[in-house]
Amino acid sequence: MNDLLIRRARLMDEPGTVDVAIKDGYIVAAGGGVAGSARQMVDAAGRLLIPAFVDAHLHLDRALTAPQEGVTSLAEAIDDFQRRSRRMDKNDFIDRGRRVLKMAVRHGTTTMRTHITVNEALGLRGLEAALELKEEFAGRVELQVFAMAGELEPAPTPSLKDFLEEALRMGADGLGGAPHLAEHMEEWVDFIFELAGRYNSLIDLHVDETDDPSIASLEYIAAKTIQNGFQGRVVAGPCCSLAAVDEDKAARAIAAVKEAGISVITLPSCNLYLMGRRDKGLVRRGVTRVRELQAAGVNVAFASGNVRDAFRPFGNANMLEEALLTAQVLQMGTPLELKNVLKMGTYNAAAAIGLKKYGIKAGDRADLVLLDATGPAEAIIGQVEKVCVIKGGRVAVRNDKKSDLII
Image (cartoon, rainbow, N blue to C red):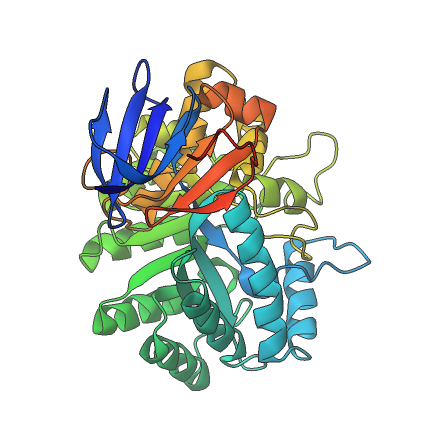
């Protein structure tokens, strides 16, 4: 007997409706008229069933710390968090992170990658909190924790190197940082690749999050990825400056990113708020060249980035909400384009952070969301309810209390 059977569900890329049978946390069958019984049944009644959302770039340690006064630049937002973090203990990090993770699950996100700042003032407090939350939410949210080297640090000092290495020993899933903000960018990148190589770790870097028409760090990271044999193991985002350079330079960089097998994470909601602050007249959006990257075959995903902090005082840990803003910013409004956007927050994001057995076919993990819509366009434009969220083959969240949904 199956554990769960979903009847009459619509999929993004399939005509008509299908049944999905689940056992021991995995999909065992997906197609028309799946036979058999189950301990629990869900009647999708023609609604859209998608793999659960993947938020591939979030800062849990900064969440819910929005100041009363606004900021005027990225550097000012970084400084605001650094000042506040000196007064934060581990319990504070855990409390805020827990609230955001609960919001995320309610909105259909069951996998998340969080960047946690590690610097001289903060030490490993934020990382310790994130690792505790990873354990606490196991079975509800799969949390990947990346140690992020302190921003605006000119070069990797011995103590910072020790902190990052200790973070990997403690169980961090990978290394991050913002080398483009450092005086010695190449030294930072070299160290991160060297340390990741020693620990067989993944790399996820903030890259060229500036308005300057310079993509030196993106080009350098692509070259280092190939040189070190890290193809498919590096993520870069949000790559804002790629939109500020000329077409030929952008094309060369995009070709290098494709060759390096780097996935790109765009953060439209964050970068709309942060970038172009000093522009007059025509104010830049700060969003990378998503269309050109995708046309070149680069895997591109969107993510929420920040939730109610100095970097972005908005957000509800709601990837469907992020999809609506992403679609508008990228000017993707046709049904086909909106399906592409929805995939950027699901399939593309899963590929970026290395999720295996992700999707809706036999053998895939049963992490799913039933949306109160018949297709991606209706789901995004209508900001519809996430009727139920399924994690590990069980109904983890019900947002629709209709008695006829679950039998």
